[in-house]
Image (cartoon, rainbow over all chains, first blue to last red; front, side, top):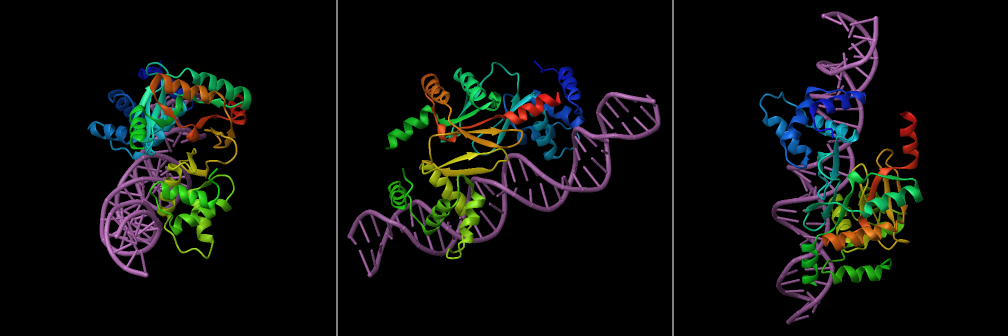
Length: 150
Length: 150
DNA sequence: ATCCTTACCGCGAATAGTAGCAATAGCGTG
DNA sequence: CACGCTATTGCTACTATTCGCGGTAAGGAT
């Protein structure tokens, strides 16, 4: 449960990384923002706070990447090629159902992903990263519309 | 098995789309290219053929998108944000194991994805698109390297 | 063969994100 | 507390892909 500043700071330093003021400000912004946010939204939130110094957008991308690599955040790429981030430990483990038609995403827990990970490990020695699992398809509404149209 | 010109042409017209010379040239290029290719590679292959007129890159992107939307091709986005396309009916149904560390992809068939699709349909009325299923994680080699480093 | 609707094309600009590089600043050490 | 190593920052340039727009041309109907 690395939701508090001290734990995160320790985790960052333990991995040989550094806790810069930019990363601190990004983490603060993430605390303020709800649910999952895009790099652009996080950048905007950092800029909004007048106490913060200016920051380059690329810094936000790199910081989010680093935080995701250490498992503090999880990243997933939605339809339009936009990546969204959220706290890794937020709530129960969940996955994203991403509708390819309307672009909506739903968060659900899927038990059979465990079996999938087991199969990939057994048959292909591949360690599936379930946190990054975005499942594409059609949501209920878009399925109805598609059949109605035919 | 829409691998021959006549069937594809019919399928395109049946969906209210048009078979333009650009699309014909793109399909020819896809026949020449092996396995899966990126939009950029397909564009290059079209340009190579001196009989072809010039074509805009955006045309390739849009044509591939349309062909994927009608199920003639399948698209999947690999690590670096590059989308690759391949014939939908090529060989047995397979999925992509994408290593987040080295970027390699392996094609495998995973039985448990059927159970996943069933669970999503039953519990969330969500129709999973198994063709676009890219599974991220760590390949065997990168797992070894990661544990060796610790 | 001609007409008409509208899907598609080429172009150029916009967007999300990455890469390279010199300058800066964490932070473990003495 | 000063020192040095190197992770990180801020540029800027670049890549992959999308979008809007005015003009072109498929292809069904006459």
